[in-house]
Image (cartoon, rainbow, N blue to C red; front, side, top):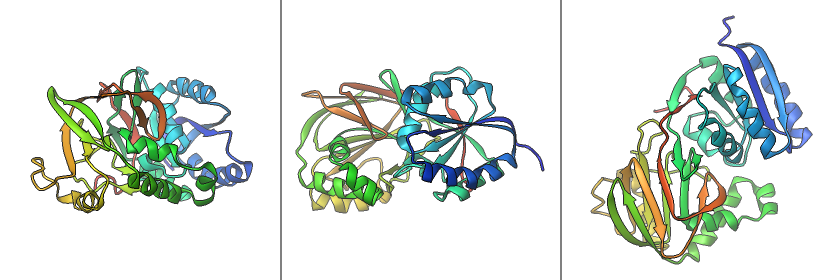
Length: 301
């Protein structure tokens, strides 16, 4: 059997329950060692511990990350700033696992190891936002309010459904804000309930029906949602037919660009990959260097 990688580092969040971690390792380890000569498994116990592990990953050929979008976000904010990085393999272990979905990775943990067997490596865009990075999305308005409204107990009990329930509740209560956007030098003043900048194509396990979104095109997709009403929902469902001139849409506007700036009349919290620790104004652009990821066999279809 041909070894695809000589040395690999497998990291997972130490805060996860042992009843979840031990079966996971038993499931995936035999598959991993089939294609890896030397496998190191590291349990991280804090965000700083995770960052330290990522900082040392340039000693390896492959970095395997087991966790959700928050774990990946923390890791990317280390890896994107490094000169040399290993190939990255994602094993979905969170509530939504949106970016692993964008890469076509199976959501069943054992099936997800098939990406190692297939060994299809792609260079994937990374987005820089102020002094940080994100992989999937950055947004302000309803998107941050939906994240903050999620009840922890509801999340534990119902998982990804909790994101949907929170989004519906927040959408019904949404109010507009004045946003100032600059997309590749072109200025736009908009009153909207939400502005989202996408690199990936999933939010809360929901696939955004915009065909132009790609994690390999070096472009960012900006979605402006003007109001929270039934007409907006109908337009959202028709987005797969979206054209660049947006003439047929009243409630949703779509832009593409390489450099985006967003500000508002008053400072707004910004959600990046489900993590809220920034505020507007924000400057977003593609990072100079993409990162290499293992992707699913149906990636790009």
